[in-house]
Length: 143
Image (cartoon, rainbow, N blue to C red):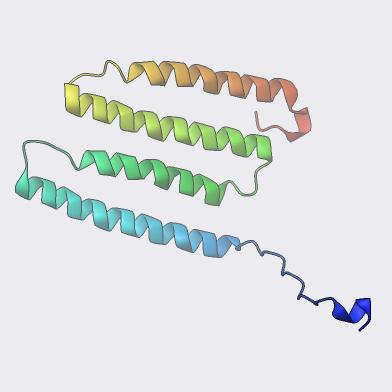
């Protein structure tokens, strides 16, 4: 047997294909539909079995963080990487801090400790945007 014939020929791996924009929008719409159905169900469960504590807001706003990031992933595909990064961080900042403010208000009846991540994360996000403006060429930046 020659050396060439003794080698095992493996098929070439296929290049992974990126899903098209329409399929991504379709999956996002399914995500929104399920989000609405489940949270309506939780809303009714909350008011039937424990109307004194509004616990349905915790999964609602927690899931809203994921839904927000899913929407950014679908609709920010055409942006440059620096703009996409700012958009994703901004969406995470807004949705997560909204969740923290709701948790803080429902549990404590006030908005006190949730101001710390709101302020410090906001400072970091502002620094991120500032660095992007300084170091991204003018033709490629959003701001």
